[in-house]
Image 1 (tube, rainbow, N blue to C red):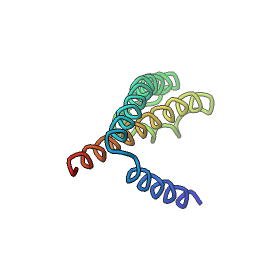
Image 2 (cartoon, rainbow, N blue to C red):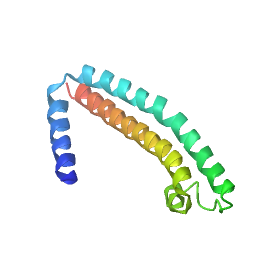
Image 3 (cartoon, rainbow, N blue to C red):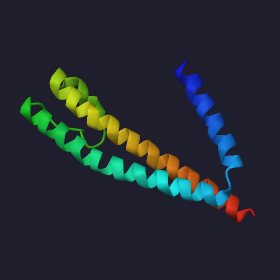
Image 4 (spheres, one colour):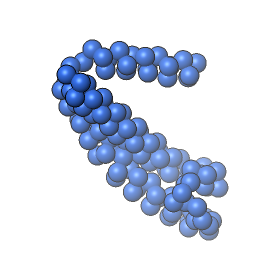
Length: 115
């Protein structure tokens, strides 16, 4: 079911990208990307800080937390994990919005160059 939702979202996005004027698409991309950065960057800093503090409070090692921090979530107690995962989700949402905005900007620029 989840895959069908993703496929439908991709189809809708492609149709929208073809119908929206290039300059409008460019500015929508700038807005969405900026929103993603404004959400994702602070959330990422808070997430990594909370993860580090939670691991240290439970006397667990912090090895590998900068490369694959999500693997360390399973080591945390439930209350600590809930706090950390909320910020993880916020950072992931911000990253997704940033990538979506960047894609819209590039699509708008390519369409403008082709006119």
